[in-house]
Image 1 (cartoon, rainbow, N blue to C red):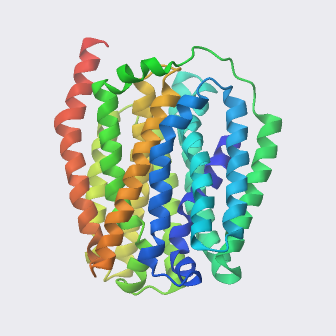
Image 2 (cartoon, rainbow, N blue to C red):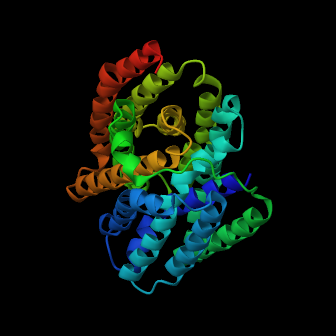
Length: 382
């Protein structure tokens, strides 16, 4: 429950600027494309800091590390609400990015350590449920609060919720045995594993493809699909609701057909991104496309995390997840950058096509390289 709450506040914070991008830009006399740099910087800072911070913290007790991470997160959210200038807002978001870097490095390993192996997919799906709740209620409600009371109020609300989550975890989170320690000297052998390297490449391509379109979904729905502001909020909620479906599909299907889940994930991503523009002419088709996109994004993201845990030891999994989180956020930043350049060039309507092309490259690598390597490892009994 505590990790689910933590995932809720972290994901709400990460994606909240997407729903308030226009208002934040207006506060600082900027265009949405210029203000979108905030999303890019946040993501790239997570990408740069995830591994170094986790290597520094890997010898720390995980419970204490989790609590310190939430404390830094709370401070960063309050700082964002108080920011008097765009550089000050960026600085506060970088502090939050540091907390983000550590949290998503330890969230999945912590969840799986609290349960038996057969319940690990379910534990991961509960963490993802926090992310889905953030997309269903956190992001849209943050947008509603921001539109009604100003975007700063939304940041203050997240700071308050994260503080309450910190107090709750102080009381309920159990101590964990230390177990084997990871040494930085083991890092080269970890990243040289073909399957681990393959997951990192897939995460980069997947995140770049998805966020090329998703980071600018608000202006896309406004200017291309001509949605009213209230309908944009509903659409964002639809995306989040379908995250629950993605969590459900993962927890029930991954253990029985993991390669099928991976294939369907990238195929669905490619198709839904390619259909964004054609579907924008119809409200039902737009909703259907967003439903597929929301389901696929959650399911495939969980599958990649499960693949990392499958191919790493208990000691190395937090470090591997740190690299995964860093690379994933480099993909978020890259996708946001590409989407921003497309928007600035007057090609906002076509961001889905750009994302679909990148997803197609990921699908080719998955089917021709990663899955054959994984099947060979299983046959060899490694």
